[in-house]
Image (cartoon, rainbow, N blue to C red; front, side, top):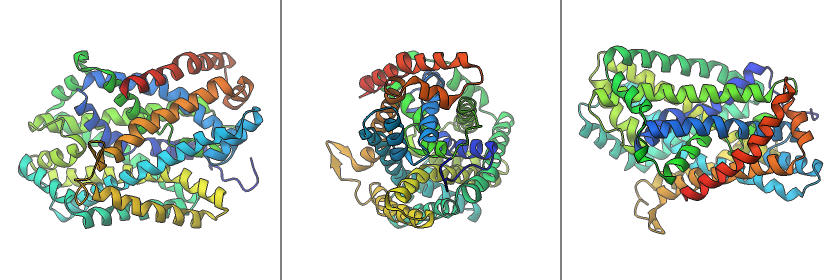
Length: 446
């Protein structure tokens, strides 16, 4: 461990932080609406295959690069490349992952602002909607109000910045040990609530009875992108968390726990949201506004809906903040190393740079909604480029670097499997399945 290097205080702290980064709006907001847009259960099966078969091996590769390099992603990859006798130019893979994290944050902060705003409405007693048209009108009103979008997006950024500025153990680790159990408990409670209210059989059928007639190349790319987005692969956060990881902690076991928890939360989110949607005859393919246009109606039609709605949006607030923390940490760490700044100053620079881009993202929904690039809206490109292009490309480059360029002895030493026989299957999987699969999915989807 490098002198002065931050480190996780415990294995549970690392797991909670990593799960907190992986488990977020990607599971509870993005997974249900992407599932709705891509036909339901067939997409879910492909997503599960991508998460387990591709996400776990690449997550292990990210963590081993971070722990081996002991720095922020660009510097960590450069250090591993030099040790392996490769060019330092491989550091551009790390630069890409940091840029991806920053790009996702510009839109993520706005969506986190939606969540905070709806939680505020729930506490004020104004969140419930008597009809689908009323809920859609309320959400459209929010989208048309740039000042409200910018204000609540800024609140989300300030909350995350406060945690990051406090450091690894005192800030991130302490916060997630409280927030993550709360998130799981709220999700399970809402799922059990749905069992008694209704809509669960239709939701189970929608999520787990596949219709492969709706599958095409775009479905596979959407599933891979969702797996990467949800787990946190190729967006620098896991590599940064790996840099804080003591040698005594198993990377393989940690990766399996992180992906299992992340997948469980995504499926739980589906079993929270879709029963409410089906029970109330709402539209499963409502897009990015799914939970905001459908759930206020569902909550208004149930006994105690105001309390349940407030609990649900509190859950989303927790998910939003933990994910912003995970996305921001590698950007902050990179700036601290690159510019020689303290953690607090690097945090200030990161969020000061993020804010104007967050404003642009907010304006893409209203004042700049008519701006078109190559026939698509600005909002489309802000979402599409980082999620559907940069994430898979970053994952592919990480897979190629670790599977084909870094000497096997480095990976074997860093992974340090308890049962050594597992290293060769992982290595072969990375070389002959993961890297080609990501390449083919990216190619067919684009």
